Each structure stands twice: as structure tokens, then as C-alpha cells.
Amino acid sequence: MEKKAILQRFPRSPDVLLALLHELQRANPQNYLTPEDLALAAEYLGLPLSRVRDAVTFYTMFSLHPRGKHVIRVCDSPNCHLFGAWSVVEELQRLLGVGVGETTPDGLFTLELTSCLGACGVAPVMMVDDEVFGNLTPQKLREILARLKEEG
Image (cartoon, rainbow, N blue to C red; front, side, top):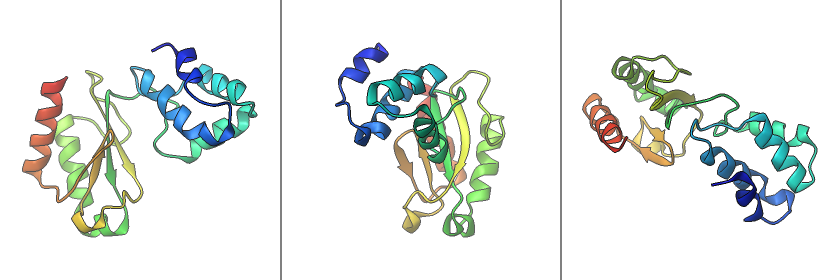
């Protein structure tokens, strides 16, 4: 979708900044916000560019760098950490062949760490795009990745 069409779906109110940024990021095949995206949002909403950039750099859901089609965020909160988050990270690194903050050579996956995902009752937890997965085991990780690879 053309970015100007995305802008026009939103009222010209600072209250929609985060939702607008999510849509602009989602429209980018490499799953990130370009400098042009930030400038478009700032101009459209009548905000200083610094305020838009502050929002993007504060929230971990946004990125200023290209990422994979699917962003895998492993929760590293104390609860998930106690229930094996680092085992999950190590298994994902092994399965994907990348480290934290890296993208697979095919551009399909980016592996990231994040703070609490709010699903402590099913720790360890990860989020892939907008879907949360809990009670993770090596087998469950393999199944999730296989499904995502099949979908492309």
C-alpha cells in the first residue's frame, strides 16, 4: 500500500502516532521505519521529527534497521529468565543460524530480545510478529519455525 494512502486512513492527531508508525512499518517489506517514514509521520501529524524519533527509539516494537519478514522476540524478563528463556534463545540461534539482533540470510527471520510480554504464566515466552507463544520447548520451537517457513 502506498504510504500516503496509509496516512490518509488516520486523523491528523498526535494521539495516533504509534498506530500510524505500526502501519508504516508493516508496509515496508523489510519490517522497519525509514527516515522518510519518520518525516512523513511528523509532517502529517504536525509533530517535531524529534518527537517521532523519540517514540520509535523508545518502543522495542519499532526498528530503524531492516529486519526479517518475521520478527521473533524472546522475553527476557526475570520470570522468563528463570523458566529457561536463555535455553530458548540458544535453541533459536542454533535453528536459525543467527545471533540476537541478526537476520537470517534468506530475510525470513530476525531474532530479538524484549522485556516482559505479559504472559508470565506460560513462561518462557516469545512473540513472533503479533502472536505470543508460551511454554516453549525445543520441539515446540521447531514446529513453530517449520510452520512459518512453510507459509513463506
